[in-house]
Length: 408
Image 1 (cartoon, rainbow, N blue to C red):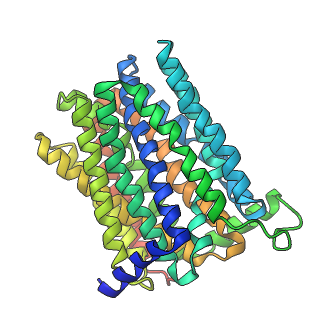
Image 2 (cartoon, rainbow, N blue to C red):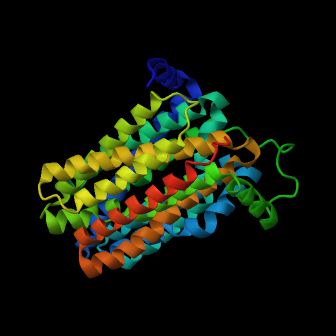
């Protein structure tokens, strides 16, 4: 831990471009997390089964499996500002549609799932452009600090978003949370268009997008054992541990007989833990090898799932969700930092797309598969199975890949 590294990290917030981007991202993510809390509870109130809950999460994340590599190529070969503008506008229409459906009492679970699929498609194509914003507006030696600071606002929004959604859902209903989500797109798009540099035509690939170049870039990244190990860590963590969040409302409702306020409190604890993890990362020297950090906390995440499956008291569940948020942030942010620091500017979008593919693709498959096991065995047994598998798989990854040279 380093006090100097912590102070250096927070100085970034005083810069005009990064500081403005940080605030706009916070506002946008507050809206996103308000919707993320309201949506599964809305699905359950409409009579959706745990399987449909998992299917909704799958629809949101599955397009990443097919489109995120294309999105990475778009981020490297086209104007990221225009990519963000076009796809964010399409995304903003989805919560607006839900608001209108709720206003006319016409909402059905399948409609929510279809809208989630649309958001997933736009996410797959635009998320690499989003994720490569920070390295575009800071110096290379500041990338680790910039990503860690970006993680602080993301996890702070995980606290504020569910809190706001909880108030709105108990007063005006789910429509309030979706309205906040729709409005939250505006400040981020305006700021992103300002802070992102325009594409320099002379630096853009003259051959444009083609599959051969895309696959060549992917192979180049995967040839490096250190990066391959980090991507596997992220994938299996998302596959086996991320369903904890997807099925949290089922756990709260069935095992703890809680309502939406209890659900919001648990999600807020997850965000608080993630915020603590991001702050801890600010104190770690930028030159330190992030592979052991990422892998060790992915194992801890699996341990948390096992404990969640056994806990019977409210305060214990809240504490474990805080530890889960801490573990996930430490693992995924360390992996993201390593990947972006190791990539060249010309293929940064493609590298980010591989991180997104591992994380969001794992989440999609994990939500669908866990939805099946929850329906068959119950939420507690399903989380126990996932946690034990995560501990075993991540331990195997540690034994093999941490023996390889860093090569960063």
